Amino acid sequence: GTAAAIALLSEVRPPVAGAILLAPFTSMLRVVLWKRNCFNKPFERSKSCVDKFRCIEKIPLVRVPVLVCHGKEDVVVPIEHGQAIYEKVPDKVPPLWIPKAGHLNILDYPELWSRIRHFLF
Image (cartoon, rainbow, N blue to C red):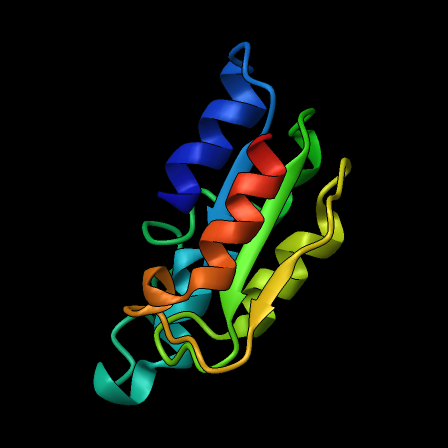
């Protein structure tokens, strides 16, 4: 959802009051290369097909408040991606870094839902 949300917010600019990004990535290629030991370097020759949309380059164009939430134990998308996205958000709200949350269980943490409620209301 990261790329779709950032594309919509940076290019179309719909009338929304804010956005929430859960475990966002800077670019899909960066995630794949981080895990490349699983893929045996398939993207060494051509990276362009995987890296056409770089969230890290588009997030500065988003003109609404953005809440970034990320689990510190995320092994799918490392928290450094969320931190990098957060640093480029023009209209920052305090982020939420959940100490024991991973990528697949971040929704199980009550502090996530509390923070989202606070952001929305």
